[in-house]
Length: 401
Ligand code: PMP
Image 1: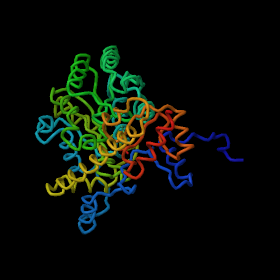
Image 2: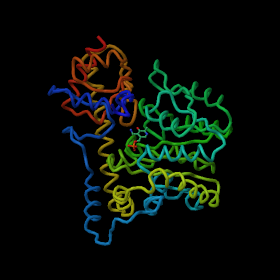
Image 3: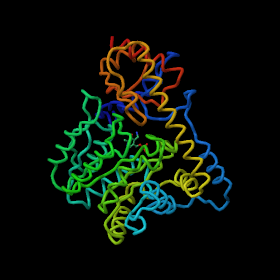
Image 4: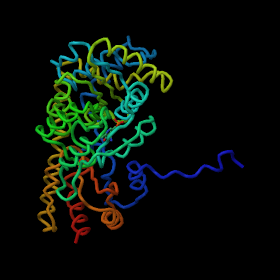
């Protein structure tokens, strides 16, 4: 008898479990639109040319050793990461009031930020959008924060419930933390306009709500790194404080390398350095120090203007292919005369389309058409290709008629 015999089997992760089911399906026509990972037109994972080049440089550099790096990670990587999200001319950076810590991709950055807030911030309530990425409530709950939702998505318009958002944040207790997707909201693909961001900023600052940005898709939404950072930059420009969790999983295709950063923008250099000293105490007993490889790739690319430019070209190619998939899917659905308004497919931005298909329709599409997606009707546009669009359109047509 095992001492663990009372352990109950846990359910699969709702997102990663989709891939498990996909892998178990022998059908040749199956399509995996579950996990948010970029695929080429041939359906293959992509390693960017500029990443390969950076790796070559690193491998051929005999001065590189495998010593531990500091608890906060690689200094160059941190500096360049802050610059990437806040902008080269950011006064916050010039005034040394940003603490940046290399973390384990976006998830790790969110978790370290949350653990820091739980210990050192006066409010432990965090408001997250409804709906949001499924891991958000788990990350924040386990860090000891209490999770509340604010209205975000309106199913009737398949757009932003801006009135509901303002009402809910307006009713939040003073000082509450608010999780905001910097761009390309996951799963809805619905972002506020810049005017709406400005109203959100004013409301949040007037109530001293603390912004915690999740930036997992910088450059992936519009194809421009600067455009996709605008939401964060307007909040930082007012001189107020915020946290930013960044991921290089999507925009540099470094998924499994687990490379990201947590930036905490503070009011003064003195506060920022004290904050950094406390974040180190969060990291040390959790995983001691971050890994070298992925962050070295990023630092190598961000340091060289040539490689940086190559990256922006490859990034835009990925964003453009996703946009083209939106148009192709929309056109294919129009061509089939599928009932309903499907314009949200081309209006939504980023990696995902929130189709509006319900759980039963999703199950039908999986069973009859071998199409795999999360049960909330979210599809990863990056998993589609010109070849698979017709099959998906057939399935969607059949599901709603
Ligand atoms: N936030 C959001 C909104 C995401 O979609 C993701 C990736 N699915 C992440 C954070 C974190 O991903 P990672 O830990 O792989 O960087």
